[in-house]
Length: 328
Image (tube, rainbow, N blue to C red; front, side):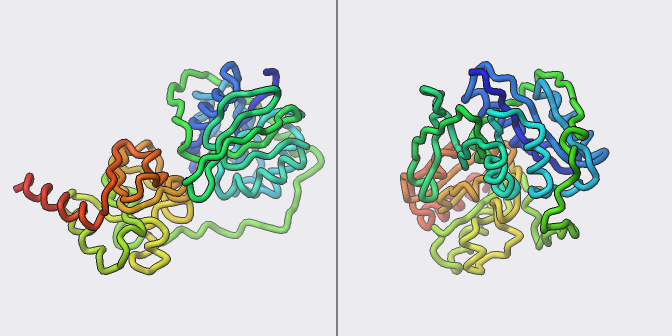
């Protein structure tokens, strides 16, 4: 395979997102001999810090440095990437808010295929990439063929590929700013105003080492008492999936997921949570996941280190009693 593979890197405060290491693994499943080039855009010292972070994992890092990129804007970045990316290349982008905004239009500009939300790859056959996607909230896996002969823009679901933490590279950082901005910057209809940080609430789950997280399997808000009893017994904090917040049973500051908080606990107890990719997208740092769900086919079991098929309304009180018994 002669096509070059690029990975667009998302970063914050000078540190690359966890997906930067996951895309190395994803690229290796497309082409085991691939040398992946990182592409990273931003401004000033934060960009420089992120480039150095990424250079330990990628053989080459292309950076685009412009003050207009201090806040990422797909309308501005898309034409820049189209100027510097070679024809017929494969571009990997994290499947999150910015990636979903950037990627469809980028595939059009590159005249390349668009493959969204890939969770696995199974090699190449007759110039077509065999990819795996999930449908119906993860209940069904679909195997698709994508013609990559003219290149492709592929979004990678966060957490689907194991992070390559070898950091064995000593990548060369190449400044592509002049080439990327040749012809000026796209104005776009959107402009950055400010970053509005979400309220932390009474508990900051982003700093918790152990989280007891509850989903729709709790059935009723009145049943949340057993969740808090278990969390107290474990010395943990309580978090939840989006349906619990939508039902107004818990505040949004406790929600884990792409539309909630991103957390990095050491242990994550998922109780009555189906395990949609939106929820799992909020889990970073490879926590030890224990899942309890009465649906044996729940997607959460694919991500869990330990899976228990049971009704949480029966299981939780027994577990809390046993923990308290051991503690004396």
